[in-house]
Image (cartoon, rainbow, N blue to C red):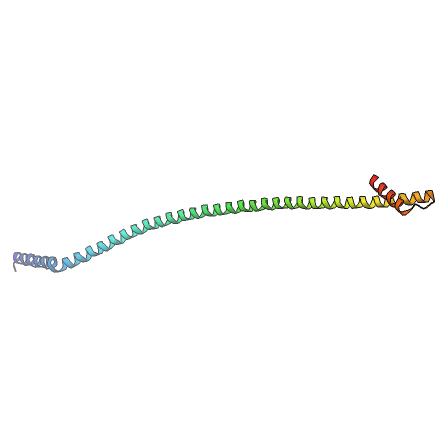
Length: 156
C-alpha cells in the first residue's frame, strides 16, 4: 500500500462526503436552522410588541383610573354641595315656618287679650253697677241701667 494512494483515496472520500453533505444534508439542516431563527425572531418581536401593548394598557388603565378618581371627586363635591343646599333650604323653610307660627301665636294672643279685656270690662261694669246699686240702695230702672252700663263700658 502506497501512502500517497491512501491519502488520495481519503481525499476523494472526504470530497464525496463534503459534496454529499453539502447537497443532501446541509440544505435541510440550514433550512431548519433558518426556520428556527425566524421563529425566535418572531417570538422576540411578539414579546416586544406585547411589552409595548402592556405598557400602553398600563397607561390606559392609569389614565382611566385618574379619570375615575376625578369623576368620583366631582360626584362627591356635587353631593356635598347638594347636601349644603338641602340644609340651607331646610333652615330657610324652618325660619319661615317659625315666623308663620309666631305670627299665628301673636294673633291668638292679641285676640285672647281683646276677649279678656271685653270680659273684664263687662265684669267691671257689672260690679260698678252692682256697687252703685248697693250704695244707692235703690233700684234703677232697666233702661237707665242699660244706658249706664253702655256708658261705663265705653269709658273703660
